[in-house]
Length: 288
Image (cartoon, rainbow, N blue to C red; front, side, top):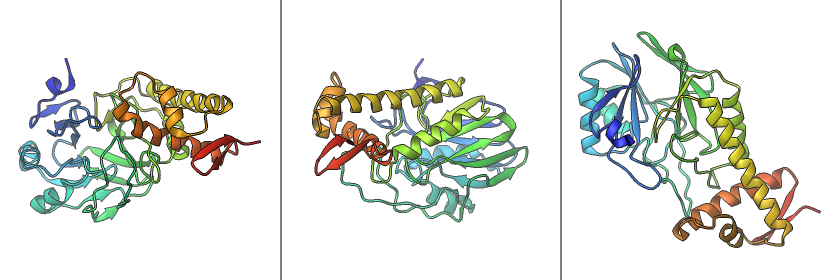
């Protein structure tokens, strides 16, 4: 059964005693079947990643809230498939927007994810370790930069569940696209997750992850493999990113090669910080 069948658009699905999920109707190559908005709590609620500002989705969220008090609307980061619905929902419900810091960066490179939401204006920014609480639930912010510099995950303490936004997704690897996406930060944030005792991840895209440490380890291993591929290409004298992509991503739709190049660039910048490679104009070389 695919994700859209498990969670039909516009209908709340109860996935744990404290967590409900509403799937936004914004499927795409980067959002899978759509953005999953989570409602945490039973008597009063927090809304996590309200999603796109689309009338059908906003109406579905209002119906799922069903008149219950909402303590906070919380955003993991400010890409346009995550945060634009925060403002109209907050205005309708007269509740605060609490979560990640605002961030808007112009990036003219080829993307495989959404652009930044310039309208996002939180009433309160959560720092690492700070919490929002309600009746029977606690959501603690965990700083996980990498996909974006302002990315937060939210730890539902009572269920040892982590809402991972786009840091860890249930269907694909996360996009790390400079200038704001940072591979060094992303890999450090994955390592941080491996040290935790979460029992489930609830990503913004894709199914819940019930073996979270195993997935985090696998994602970190995947990035290490890509790093090794880049080093080997440099050793063979392949120094230009599009040429690396053509060799490293054989079989991948060429329309995605531009976005793949952003990932390669993120790895090269990370390797440069390690002192292993250096940039020479549009080309790269191993550090002598």
